[in-house]
Image 1 (spheres, rainbow, N blue to C red):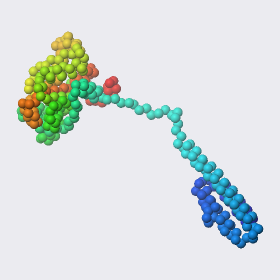
Image 2 (cartoon, rainbow, N blue to C red; image 1 turned 180 degrees about the vertical axis):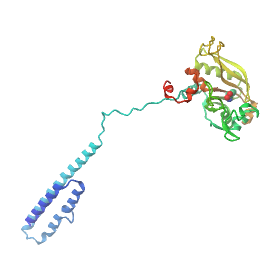
Image 3 (tube, rainbow, N blue to C red; image 1 turned 45 degrees about the vertical axis):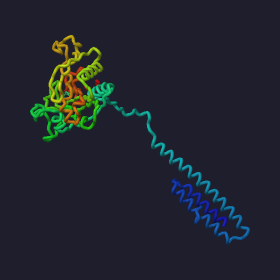
Image 4 (tube, rainbow, N blue to C red; image 1 turned 135 degrees about the vertical axis):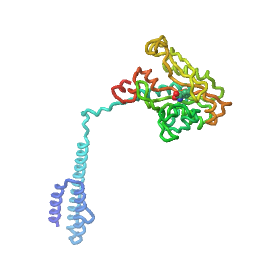
Length: 340
Ligand code: PHE
């Protein structure tokens, strides 16, 4: 019996030496130490042994069990360490390699201008609203009191999508949307893209940007309009800037005006770029909202009045950053854009 156990031991030890993975190790454990394993078989068969032999054999079997258990434990921890080290080795990052450079972008000069304009008006208590670039003829013209024969309604001036849908020709339809959806008092601005059939030259593009303003409340007068525009221009270009209101015509405001500001180049003294007038012309259009427009939006003109203004954002950006060609704003040439 003793010899049989000794043989079993040397076979087991030999097998153990060849084990190089955890699955084989577990199979080994089941084969020798499991419920139906080799050592258990020997212990079960001890009934046939003599009284004297039994404790001896029991002792040897238990010693062998202890020995195998210790070995399994050691091999298990070795295999686990090996696995861990291999994983660490494979996942090693070479921190000395130079990283990939990510170029940090910035906002387009036009967007920077819009943001700056919005901030000036936000500080004056206006809120910013948005409107769609694809508009109804109703919002873009009819509700704005624009007569059927107005040239801007012509196919050659406006991008129509269908007979009643077009690319908005100005941001003024946002006035209509705002007045139809909300009750006065209203004090909003809205900036965005606008579209007209213009041939491209240094100052014209078929796609350009406007910023619209609208104030509706009780007792709003032309004085409020003039003060607001004046404050805005001074805030944007500096205290020394003067504004000049010239009478004009817009179908949706009455009275209407165009606003000129001091020539930025000479600050009003007169130079070549302002034709010696001292004025930078037509920076914005404005006026008192026409009673018909208020009525179209369900606002009683006997109770409420208000003013509106619209300005060309591209124009302001060009004056501000001294850009002499509007094409530069839309070409997305990084050599140009990186300067801002
Ligand atoms: N919508 C006018 C334009 O595009 C500008 C404007 C806006 C005029 C608001 C008066 C009031 O020319």
